[in-house]
Image (tube, rainbow, N blue to C red; front, side):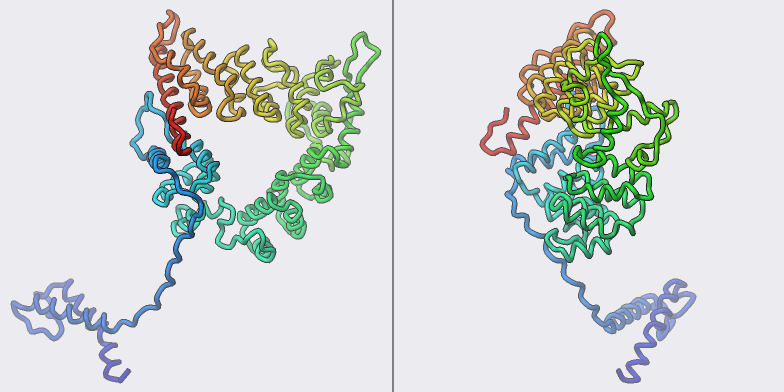
Length: 544
């Protein structure tokens, strides 16, 4: 650049500033530089500004071009059938705030059907329509329960979009391989680098994904850095071992029993007690067996209990919490923990070869039955033992809804989870037939969807009975919501007879008949809509 050119270039900013100042003050107060005063001064100012603008732009050096955005990856899965794509758009448009809200009356709640639609679409292996991805990611952003199914359906393009929009960054944390530095699980070097250098959330995601693919490799990775991890991080990492828990994990978990964090020790002990062949399970079995026995000298064989008199250091190391909660006796607190952690296979041999049903039926002396049965319930849930769960649940038609061992609805729901889907549905159907729907809501929540025919019939019959009795309909709104999502769509034809407004008994709640009619109309409409949704996802299958 010559000296003259440099001087001109250096003077341009000053010249531009003087023009701007003149424009702000007005040409009647200041004359632009190089312009004679007069009536043409405003026009001359604009001409001078235009010329200065051309000079400024001409002197700009071109910027370095940005890296061109890479195209979104291809999704090799087959596209949705057109009818299913239109249905997805309607479901996504119905999300909260998209339609203005208001009372739905007999209209289905489309957003509540989206999880089932996603599950069905994923089961059939379809790819998401590209134009639906923004609304799908927005829906998943607002509802964490949707994220796993939504991101699986959205596929690799969702991650591509999430890297461009901060509002969708949750997808990078949630989806396997979503992080910008997440390696292929077949890349040992990439895995080790992320484990050593990644953020905590990335490391948890990595460990969980690796655990599902190669449990031993995940455990080895954790062992390498275990002693340097923070206590709260160790707890989260240890919790990831629940998936695929196996006897090979015992050595590592035994070392974790000596951890300086009490929470880590308790979690390690809980995991070890879920391994019936572990050394800790054997130690707990010996302690529990020393406290519980059968007294055969009585007229009827009776279980007798001698709870521990102390909680020694060895018990604490094995996860027994020494300090009892407020309102609990120490000895009963220690007993419950020992029995809960002992393998359930301990008791048939201890009680003369009796089956779980026969053991649970034995009387328990000195008021220990509630504590002992509650501990067996927790053990059955932890060890997912169907035989003991069945025994502790008892017959669903028993006069006492609590069963011989379960002490709460939540406990019964957890015991039911150990049974297979068919048996679970049959038990809940029997419970509803005897005890009605008022206590069955939590039990229905653990049943497989769609509900098996016996369970569906039991729910519909119980709702019909409640309607005819003039019961408060609002008490059954939760069950109605479950039925909309869980009843088999084929049940819709059985419900047509319930759509009319019933005659209200004298003691019925005001307006109950209209509410029941409206609720059944919404139920029937939703069931038929669900049937149509499934048919649209299966080309060639007619809608019901």
